[in-house]
Image (cartoon, rainbow, N blue to C red; front, side, top):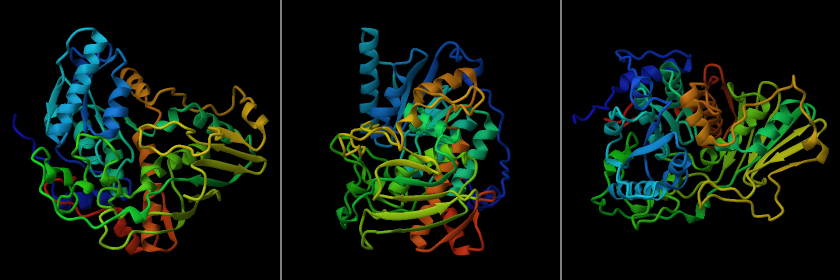
Length: 467
């Protein structure tokens, strides 16, 4: 199969980034593709054939298992830049279907390049569970090829990338779910419904508690030979070329512990996006700010010493506000969760002891309640039939499958995911610049601040660049 060229001109990327800030996008010469899921033998009424792009920790323990037990779905392909992980994922899925079917199953195909997986016309939809810096490009290629997408959060590495992706998805008409699964957990829906219906009066403050990485854990690492099973150049993608060391990527011992890239700013922003995108999304849902953003932000954070391999932020404090006057205070010093405070009481919501993967932080208190309030009667108060009733999803992956069939929007569509991610990245920019910033959520730019606006995008390394 001829390898698809994924190189796009940097000039075009910059032009699109600027256009995105004003809400316009131009993509020339994009063919109209009729997906197999519309006219093929694997129509939604029959079976949704799924390919998994990225088969690390979150994929093999959360995303693939999230769909493989649904009789409407069939995972038929896996792809990873680490051939060992691709083989392990194939075995995982084949073994699952062997057990489910009661006979030996060997139907999963492996790929080392996601474009070849996307070019497979038998595949209707894809799971994208790659590192943060590899979210946008395969997602754009997938929707252009007519695939529906479930993509892990955060939506993007930069705000400019996120805007390009959101516009492209909306133009494609594909079903696109962001992996902000807290929306499909009943306590978060209930908390946001109660807040939106005025059960705690007029909200004036929200407290957000996030876990953080310990800056003291970072060390200076030496260069190591690139393992023969890893396509390291492609793994780096659009980010700068840097030497390989195992702690920068993921474990090579066959294990799936928390990977090192999560703690490298080259590939993400740390816990401000890693967990912040979950909780800030709930803030947006509860405040009805899902399609806008803060107007000002001030954040401070500790960072590891210069030269450390793991260089994302550690302990932090943040304060930002919306145009409606609601103030949000975020810090690792607060309990992990979201606390809405209004004129007539408060509501606190958290995951409790739920974790998506074994390495996720959970509540340290055995008495922690997933949903709490200043007065228990708030939690049992009824919402009128003509009140605000939020989207009801009981399972995030299943909601995606439901929407592939119905062609209705999922509970966390791309624009909602992009706006939640933008809140995180705005905070991160303030951490880096160590000063207060003013944000224009309509044009998605910092006001009168050229230095801050340089953080809206990053230089891209050919050939892994957007257009």
